[in-house]
Image (cartoon, rainbow, N blue to C red; front, side):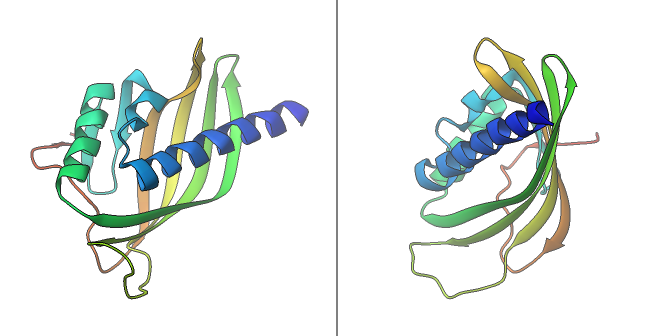
Amino acid sequence: MTDRLALTQEISLILADYWHEVDRNWGRNAHLLYTPDARFEASSGALYAGRQAIADYYRYRESRGARTAIHLVTNLRAEATGPQSALATWYLQIHAADGLPPHDSAPPILIALMTDTFRRDRDGWLCARRTFHALFRGGVPVTRMPGAMEHGA
């Protein structure tokens, strides 16, 4: 139990730092929290394969102009799947709107079950695969980079 608790705390901190980076710094450094060969399977159906594609996605997201986004993480469960690998599931709730705040209050634009696989290397735990499983959608579309490949294709 102690090992699982420590792993859950480590991954919880990684997720908090990641979404803080995305919400407060446009995700400019978010790609560094992924393995070089990572797969980011977005709720839009897009696949961003590799660190460069993930970096390109976040650059595109920022280039669209002012947007307010809040990513809320809850119900994290993490388990080791090997000495250097782990699986985490958690729920993501996104509130977002184009433009500068304040915005009118609205329901979340997405609630998703998230499945992440992590690998540990000399840099610590890095996400090797992030998959969004959309459960609820509403109002404002999630961001999708034009020309992105489809996951599952």
